[in-house]
Every structure is written in structure tokens, then in C-alpha cells.
Length: 299
Image (cartoon, rainbow, N blue to C red; front, side, top):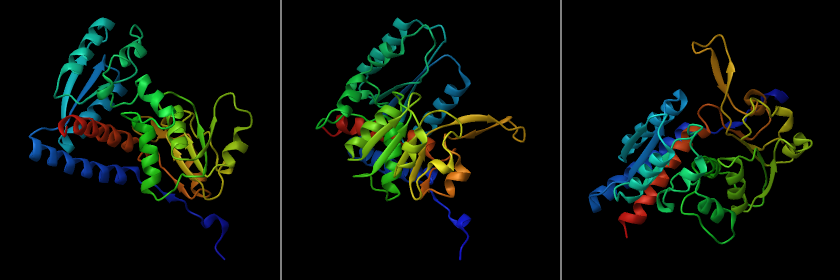
């Protein structure tokens, strides 16, 4: 008899899946370039010099280079006026070679994020955060031009791992505009039965335990324990939380919202942190940019 501890969940390798997607994108970009003499263009706008934002942005720019997408770099000072930033967005809206516009969040306190994001042309909203794109996502029979990258990446991980969503019970932990809410809407569109658990939910454990699919996006380190997971469930962990770790040179390590070690003993599938959802977010950004470009170039 195998001991009960012998169960090991399948680890969903987000890095490998993202790499496969990037190869597919590179192939399509080559095709556009050969057939039309044009390539997709992505403008990445960053305001100020937050370390984490800087590293995200350089990662995105590098990913563009790798698949042949032209990246337009817009670096603005911390003190930039809201009106100047919006002016810059309008300039990019008007540039025909720019098919996607991404404004790295968070923006400095003196700038109204919502105001800036709603100025991005709907056709170039590769982050999928325009209220109209989210609104269409929420409505039956409507299709947004773009889906937000992280939620789209979560569903892509499920489908490429052969996990069907239709008719399944899915629980989303967290209700942010960036992940929780749109991923719940996407699951609903894919015919799952969806429950959203948040800070005011009573007895979240029993709700999560009932789920065939768990998407954890609460931003709380290792909040979801192994005992909360239904045996065989698919667990997608969106959390990236820094916890102290003196053994690391940086003094910290990254963990998800799920206790990975425990989850591996119960779940059917689980994504690691790092190396799960993270690489998919960037791959989906590239995919959105490609799709936006194809809409324009192939017309």
C-alpha cells in the first residue's frame, strides 16, 4: 500500500506554457512581417522610479524584443502632471504603429489612475482595464476587445493543462479589479458555477473546500491551507507575497496565497510561485498586442 503522503499534485509549469505561447506569437509576428511588412507595436509607459515597476517594465520590454514586437518606451518623471500624462496617452492613441498601450500601475498619488486608463483607446487597451472592456466581459453575448492579462493567463493555464471548466464549481478568492473580479467573470463565461470569497465572507474554508477549481488572488501569504482544498482540485495561485527569509541574499522569498507544500499533497493540479501565473501574464500581454495588431494590419 502506498502511504497516504505519497500523493503528489501535478505541478502546472507556467514558465514552460508561457514559453510555448511566446513561440507561437513569434511565429505569427514573423508571418505579419513577411506578408504585410509590419509588426505589432506596444507602448509601455512608466511614471517615476519604483523599483518593482521598473523591473516589471524591463521584463515586458525584453519579452517584446524576444517575439519581435516593437516596443515604444515612454519614461516619465515622478512629478509629471496628470494632464501631461494624458497628453502622452493621446499621442500614442494617434500613432498607427502602436497597437497596444500599457500604463504601468500604480501611478504616483497625485494622478487619478481611473482617469488616465479611461483615456486609452479601446482598440489599444491591451491591459483590458478599460471600463467598457470590463463591462462587455460582464455581459452575456458581448465580447470585450481585450481580456485582462492575468485572468486570461489563469484560464489559459487551465485549458492547456486539460482541465475543463464547464459545469465545475469554481471559487475565486479576492475581488480586485485587476484579477478577482475579471477572473470570476471569465469563469462564468466559460460555464463554471462561480463563488467569490472576500474579506467579509464568513467561513471561507468551507466554501473553498467545495471547489473543483480555486483561483487564489487575495494577496495574503499562504492563507489557503492544504486542509481547505478538495482532493483532486485544480489550484491556480495568483498571489506573490514577499516573506522574510534570512537564508536568501535578498532577505526575502516569494510565496503565493496558497500553502504550496500542503496543497501538493491534496490537489490534483497546482501552480507554483514563482513560475506559475507570473510568466503567463506577460505572455498574454504579448498575445493581446498581437491580436490588436492583427485587427489593424489584416483589415
